[in-house]
Every structure is written in structure tokens, then in C-alpha cells.
Length: 125
Image (cartoon, rainbow, N blue to C red; front, side):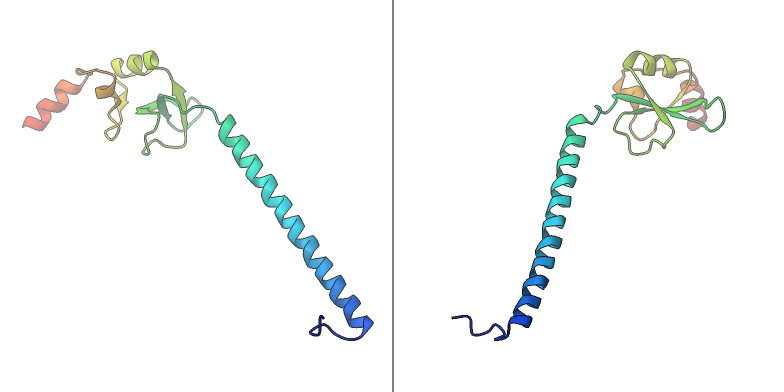
């Protein structure tokens, strides 16, 4: 029937132990991957929503705001905090720079920013 198996009992026991060891390793790997997939799915479900607007912060104790970005802007640095639409508009109105890539000033409908006239005048000369 199983002619390819060894004929003696010692080698058959060795094969059985070897296969049991491999089954245990395979089962442990399956359990670890199952747990990891469940954690990833839970993390995706519980991930906080991406903010609509973010402010990039400077370095130092006070960490002054540097730029306003859209929430999905890839240029924004790692030091940032989420802001709502009103605060983003207020920061832009007070002269904080808008990101040149995601253009939050255009999205927010702010056409005239403080200092924009000097920038356009300097570019014309």
C-alpha cells in the first residue's frame, strides 16, 4: 500500500515526529497571520477620519504654524495638527502661508491674501 515509507518502526516514528513538528509550525504561522489580518481590519475600521485641513507646525517650544494644507496634501511635514474650515480660513486671513501644491486658499475661496498684492507686483517687475 505505502511502499515508499520506511519498513522499520524507528524511522516511521521519526517521520511522524518530524511531520507533527511541521504541522505545529504551520498551525502557529496560520494563527499569527489570522491574528495580524484581524488587527489590520480592526485598525482600518477604527482609523480616525482624515482631517479636511491641517496646519504644518514649526520647530521649538512654541511650534509656530508655518503653512496651511489640505488634509490629504503629501507635502505637509510630520509636525502638524488638524484644523477645521473656519480656523484654516482665519489663519490664511491673518497672513499664514498657503501650501503651493494643494492650494487651500483656492479651495477655501480666498482670493486676496495679505501680501498677495506685493507678491504679484514683485513678479510683474
